[in-house]
Image (cartoon, rainbow, N blue to C red; front, side, top):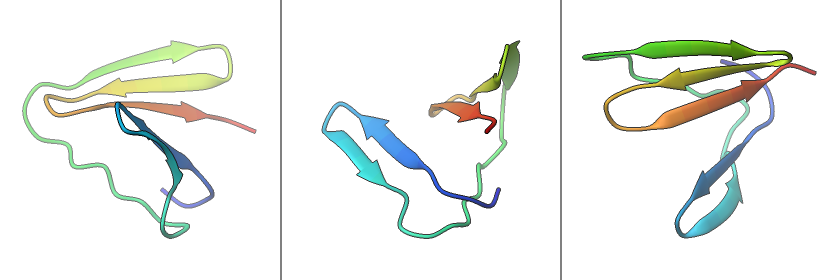
Length: 52
């Protein structure tokens, strides 16, 4: 992926360190769409991608 983003965790929110980000896709993957967002669930994390 390419563009600006943030990371939200139990420790708070931080900007992505770079404008490029790779999401490792291993194991079970679930993908959902919601209006202007895509939600991607992997075994290790949940990613929400908002389209602007």
